Image (cartoon, rainbow, N blue to C red; front, side):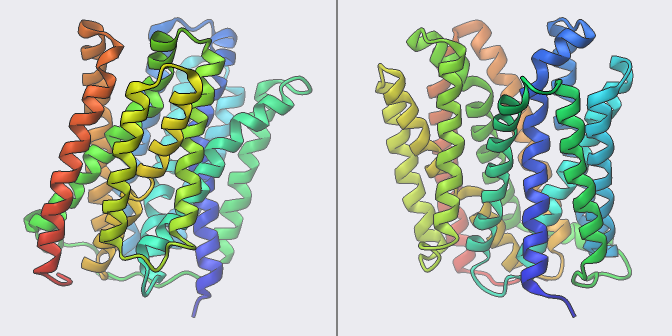
Length: 387
């Protein structure tokens, strides 16, 4: 037997670690550029390796968790992240550094997916609310790492801070190893029949492609907001980063609310409310002429986008209770492909038409999300659990 409370908080620890890992590279990039004399191309290579690792981890975690259970996968992923942080701190060359950055992405992607599937498995009701609470810890990790670096940078070199942060991952690995988790659901492994059922399920594919656009939308905010604010408002980079922090804070606060005071609101109704909040945010950002107005819009935008992933993953968990790992793996993989494809496309659009097109691309994605969501609602009303 296992304790749901202990398992849930261990999953939150894993998600916290993913948030730290995902934000660390960007936070220390200026230090890495100086240490290794990196040009823009080399820095871009580093940034490309992290999402590739996350994509690989997202693809692999599901079948492994369904076959062997959560303990081996989560423990191994945390050890990978510990090794990655040490390599990020002390690698003697960029070639070796690339390997360790990929490891951070691989371990982080596996933890992100595994902790989400795990929380879905142990939640008998209110999966979306519990997954929202889990998502709060991603925000805490993502917000906390830059703060830690800022507070300690005068007292310690960046590599010492990164190395010490890595020991959080080692502690997580030890805890994951000591905790009792739910048993593996498919002792015989994931068969082609299971994968085929997922690929033939229209509702599953619709949810996955909703997350394709959701993930891409979030990535556009993370990667292009500072450039947009600097260009539109002529503000300093440090001021533009405040707007990005407001976005992360808005998402974190809203996920906390979804998991607590809004827990009783039906998921479909909550998602419709989220669409209204997102629409208000886009209008506020588009019409904003000051940093305060834009930061307010970004705060609201974070709140509007907060429900997308946990609510849709909750739908998947209810639909595939005995194949949750593999189903989540498929959803995360498609979502990350959206992240990478649309971000690359955004780079081409910006180069040709300028950063002013950001809100137009986001609006187009938003319309796709709304359309897909209402088709999904209709499908879910006419179907029940598949496996």
